[in-house]
Image 1: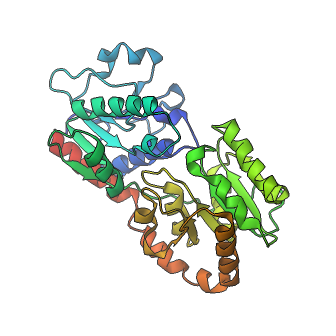
Image 2: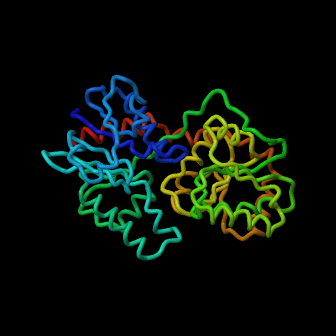
Image 3: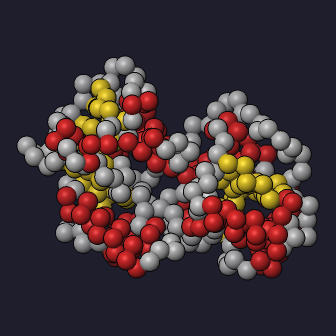
Length: 350
């Protein structure tokens, strides 16, 4: 295998799916035996050495947007983010592999002008790429529908799940009251505001963890809770460490993920790995990833969601008895398989 550069520039944003993708794929490739003289990591300065001293590192610089020849000293560049501004010059036979995580902009509250802009940027990447990966069959289908692929095959490689720490940590605060839990960036596509209806006619709380990307949407969540008379039981606690996130998943009565724009849905896999029942929307990739053992929302009407919560809480013991089915389903999503498939694809492209 010739020299490969894995783009881990997005690791500068912890508590995001792209951070975990780069971190876990890098570790998985190492576990698959890709040697240090064949693999270079393109990382922020703070992650120099992160994957071990035997591997090479190319430290990200803002100027790489314009001085791209510095990125071209390899045989294969793996672009891990379809919106990346950091791509090498394609010279001397350099190959480019692009992982497409989603076309979420098609499903978000964006102007048509912005949608055209994002589509054009993604199309440029597809045109340059020698290999294409979609992280779900849903994403592959959207690529086939909306992009000109030029006869290039799209390989579906699922992301892995989570390496759950053995020792979990309870976050600060009182969590003695039963609570529904969700996690993700506070942004409108996550659709968190519909979850406040879960609290009607019961004493449960709603806890949402994640980076606040959109202050207006954060206020919309709290305003929606106030209208339903449950504002005192809705807690937006910001980003939390992995040990605390998994404690919250484990100790919640239900993990909820009503997103309307996903290419995969890592938090869903994480919860199912722990045997926790999940309640999902039926949008984009979530039915594919959640599979037959997840619970799904047919719509987002508050009265309907309140009824769903009441029915779930009444059957809690019966539903919790099905945790092994969730664990078994989640086993198909593992980073060893993911890394092995990428390693094979690297060889194929080279």
